[in-house]
Amino acid sequence: MTAGRPKDFDEAAVLDKAVDIFWKQGYEATNLEELLAAMQMGKGSMYHNFGNKREVFKLALNRFMENFGKWLENAILNSNDPVKFIKDFFRGIARQDSNDHKKGCFLGNTVAELACIDPALEKVAADHLEKIELIFYAHIKEAHKSGKLKTKEDPRLLARHLINLWNGINITRRMYSRSRDLLPLIELQLRVLH
Image (tube, rainbow, N blue to C red):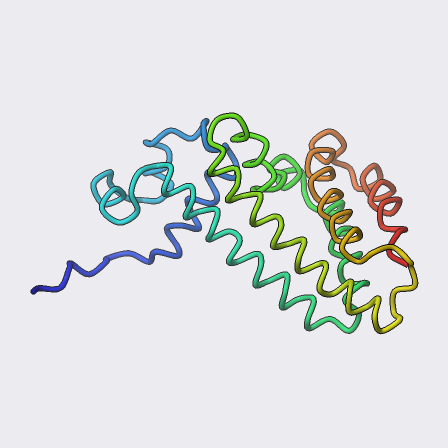
């Protein structure tokens, strides 16, 4: 048996390019030609290596979560105060530039866009959001147990609250993109973490 032809491209880099275009335009609005141009790949090569547009989108969702999930977990673990890091993470959203505000959250966008179109892809994105919630939960639970977090609220509810804040602020920042408008909203929601 002969080995398959070796890949002449960096799969991770190609998927990162797919993430970028899908994040900016959404699944439905990204046509195949735009996707191929963004990935710098021919149609045959894309189908052979990744499958159809839907499969590329699913791989892009997974790639996004792989990158973001690792970054978030490592950043929290390497912080001196995980609760302060989480608060600062949300505050940082308010300070992002207008292009980031327009993009919103790739996972949240997918849940909203594909809820009635492709429930299976919607579930992939929702499952990834739940993984982010679980990262928050693990660190909030630990801070609660160690006494660094004084609130009596259930750590699981607090983590779910943060995902609710995440989803909400990623819509609201498209309406109010200035930090002076967003930061007070975020601070109001973060008061529960005391």
